[in-house]
Length: 420
Image (cartoon, rainbow, N blue to C red; front, side, top):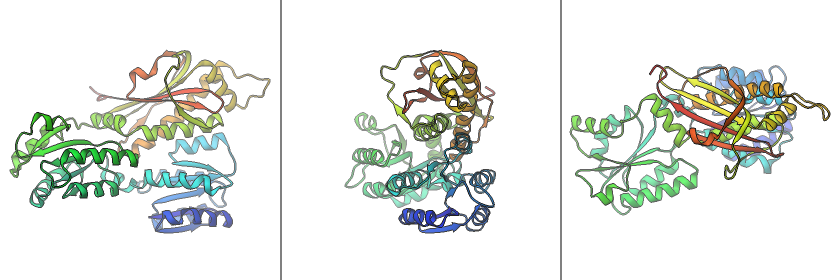
């Protein structure tokens, strides 16, 4: 893995090199923004850590140039700055940066954040090359069957093979991205198919990965007790027509763009939604933001909400952000830099919610594009008198609270074909 550090201050650059040294195979350095862009073109790094205030070209110009590049648009970027400027941070978050670090850099605080960013986004090249194809692991001790099945599977999935349960656990741990579908043949030696499922679920939890779906491949019908342990059964055959029919009946059933998008939201979108919301809300509120439990929270009555629609010809996502009237006014007072004796108005809150919705929508669009879903965004629809219990109607959603107590709900829902 190759990391580019763009930083004009030599002391800070050396500090970053020490922090990142054990996370990278190679570290390259740029003294300013122009040199950074030249190195991105010539060296094609896997990650970019960039200062914002630099000569020649600043960090925001670098981010804008990278996101406009077809080849490098998904390059993960971490920005650093000694200035906490709300407008600047919001604009960078909307462009799809992965994190924003305030200087001075404190190794003990940023080391785990850097490690997490690298872990979460190290598979971006494969996602860019493979689009939205999910990763499937085929676990079967029979090399002949794996050789037969692989060409049929590769038309629809990124395929990983394993010849035993132990091998499957190693493959799952080392894979990036990790499999979301596991096809397990009946009768595995040593670690059986049900035990393997249990072990992989525990491993997925430890690694912070989504729990895969499991399909049992068998030469004949499994017993009802065994079949009930899996999401479905796949008839194991070496006849091409029969195997193609089995794939259409099982693994390929329900794989339209809208269905894939809905599955992504339900199974995998929660981590990036939390990250995006914390960044955007934190930047605009000027406070730390954390997810909170929805238990015992009252419904929003007469509050403010914004909805952004992201859509393609085949699928659509709506993003909602909402809060109480009072919390919206408090946010507006921060964004508009109202003094202690000058209170923001409800109109200010509605206007700021347009900015908040735009920033969150742009961040969601960037996160979905990174995973192969190319969607276009709409202007936000602002409701100045929002009343609802939002948790009931959204595929995923989360409540967030600032360190000073303001609460916000952010939700995502996938919808069917736009032209249906």
